[in-house]
Image 1 (cartoon, rainbow, N blue to C red):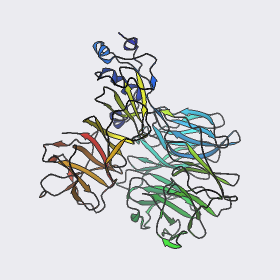
Image 2: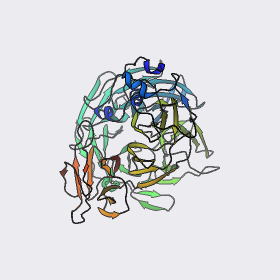
Image 3: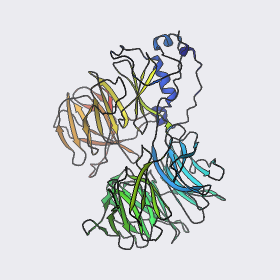
Image 4: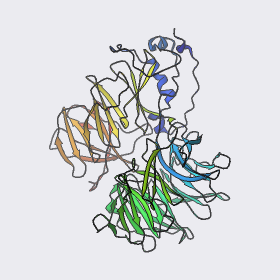
Amino acid sequence: MPAACTDPIRETTMRRTPWQRRGGLLAVLVLALSALLPVGRAEAAGPAAGFVHPAGPVHPAECAREGAFNDLGPVLSTLTLMRGVLGTRAGRPVWYSVVAGDDARINVVDALTRELVTTTPMRGAAGAWALTVASDGRLYVGTYNSGRFYRFDPANDQLTDLGQPVPEESFVYGLSIGPDGTVYGGTYPHGHAFAYHPTSGVTDIGEVSPGHRYARATAYNPDHHQLFVGLPGPATLVRIDLATGTRTTVDAGLASLGTLDDLGLDYAGGRVFVYGGGALAVVDAVTSARRTLVDGSTGAGVATYPMDSRGVSPVSPDGAAVYLTSGSALRRYDLAADRIDPVVPAAGTPAVDGPAIGYGWIDGALYGLAGNYRGRGFTYDPGTRRLDRYTLAFAPAPVQLAQLTTGPDGAVYVSAYINGQLARYDPATGRITAQPRLGQVEGWHWRDAAMYAGIYPYGAVLARHTLFTGPTTANDGELLLGRDERIHVQAGGRLFEVDLWCRRVTQIGTGLLFRLTAGHAGDFYSLLRTADSTVPNRLARYVPPPRGPVGLTADRDALAVALRDLPVQTRPPHAAVHADEVG
């Protein structure tokens, strides 16, 4: 028997929500299960290049006879950054960002040398959407799925777990900070706002707006001691008077932004910058009126402006402007004129390497982070108009594995949660080989030696028609389905494309049967269509049980599910496809 089969099993503690225990499994635990899978046929081309486990090849059939588990260790390490913020450590400017993964890690990277300074794990956290730096230089972080709140002191690199600011909340969102050091934030799944002060602790401000489960963003107004809270779904902005507790829904026509999964806020120059769904709207903090924006490229007045960055920059040192990205290219927002113009560098284009996810100013120059997966940064000097792009040394982290499947080649394929990186493990050789990134896999199925994967958040189903026998950089797949405003169902052996906006049904060929859900702002939807054209479409809402969404069953002619009917929606949510075959 191979030595690997007799290795002692290392204890693994699960610190996850019920959803994570279903899907976002620890890398160590999930791959241990692969030791019980049967060995498939050998690869004709021989073993692929890649990592070889030090214990050597594992023969699952032999291990299974003893009922043993073999701990394969972390299988995938990836780089996923949600947000970044500029601060100071030991007198030097540094980037703070959290690398998502098992025990997500705070990375501190020198903004000038671009080298990694230190990394600190946050036990039980999967990642962080919320970071802010207080006036005393300390970093505050709001995490998911643990819903915990942390303080990091760069003076001694000490991390303090401040607990859950609101009990039973699993996400902390949208941190902003007041001049007295009070940190404000929002939560999910009960949509609370909270305040934290280093001396007085946490104050639960309470549910922001009945029926809203996400308090996704906050922006503090220092001029009037008010807190603005952004709520997704139909885009909603609530103003809280922190002196009296009075809540006011700001009627600024934000419904024009649409039905959103995400909503962000920033405050600058007496304005609340509201962004989501790829668009920016600006609201006057005093009058609550929408400000008309001037598109500098055309000179036209517009209600919204295309924006893909996570927020706008801090106000420039001269007080005249903030910056953002649109189409991954820099834009300048003139605060006096509400005018947005493309940045025109002295050389090259204004493009950076993805939407901006963090900004800061150093010696009159704008520094930024761009994109989620490559650790790219940029520097723009408005005086010289020089734009530089580069890589910062953020450290990849071992990640949770969202999905596992065994291919007809006998190999085990695993997908990283959120990041979507794919790896192939060959039990016969013990080799682990990285594969091209698919996106966040929600489910997959093998048919005729092709892999079918349902991808979030694109609302797509990908097909790959070749088995993976070695490293490759090309996506050899075919996009079968893919528009994020649609879901797809099949009945009677036919595949239908359903346009959620107008509920139009079009036959587009034959294919597999997929279980489909449309997840949106804490609610879950399903659109059912039978082969009988006389049966109307039915848009329904359901509450998933603790271990996952309600399953669909099929009898070749119809789909059925236990759902509660809702009135027909005029703007149903975007769809996320779950490609688990059920028939």
